[in-house]
Image 1: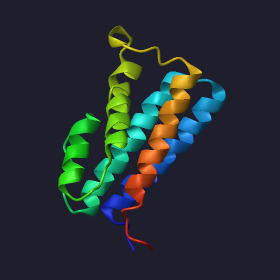
Image 2 (image 1 turned 90 degrees about the vertical axis):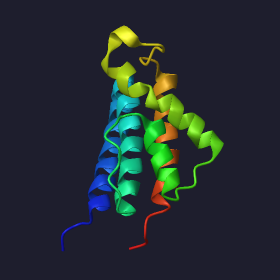
Image 3 (image 1 turned 135 degrees about the horizontal axis):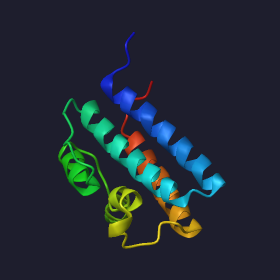
Image 4 (image 1 turned 45 degrees about the horizontal axis):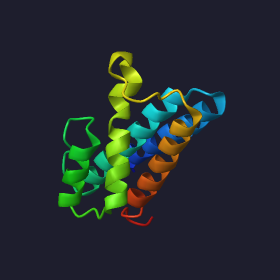
Length: 130
């Protein structure tokens, strides 16, 4: 049987978290920040597909979060704050001329991966049990 659309997205979420963990161990801290942002983006967009909605074509996690909240995802203010922080890592990790924060710090990468794991787990808790 062909996987449902949201299952494909959550498979990629798992990959991104594994890659981020590996990059952390190897000291590639900006990559950890990028992959952490991507894991959240994929999870949120996967949630949209779970609800049979096409997610917005953006890397702005705040916009995707609002869409998911409109579809019934319950996200508390602490997670919204964390999502806001990680949303900036998409551009900051890829374009060095717009860096507001030094992403090449172990503490920053560790926090990004921790936030991503927490948020992904929250979104995954809304998936149907199989």
